[in-house]
Length: 128
Image 1: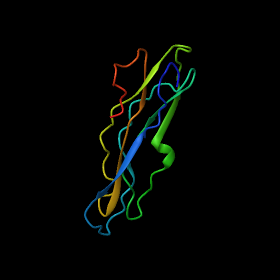
Image 2: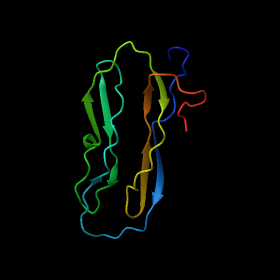
Image 3: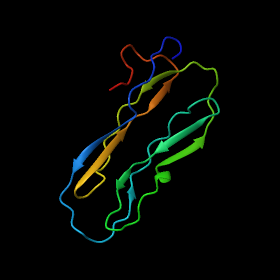
Image 4: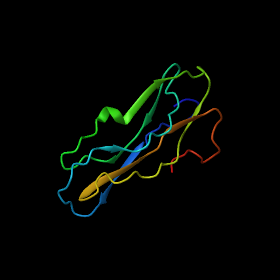
């Protein structure tokens, strides 16, 4: 941490269990994705920005599975170098849909590190 800041050690995502009705064997269901998140801030000067999406429904009954590489996009970006910036956590996004429509599944939510040009107000570190 620079300029008297604190290190960032909190989680970027959370996962919780969700329970759906018991499974019945049926037609194949292909993987389905949620919408893309907003692009992140640049990670460093001449660095990269990222955006993510979560699985809305996992494949079932022999349907086409999700490819892990389809969950993240990366793009180049430029950022003013040597400018002082202050980091805060964004608010948690809403939990996504349960990964299963029956049986046991998971759901997740994310938050991001945001860079500010000015120091945040006292006590506003985004660590909700």
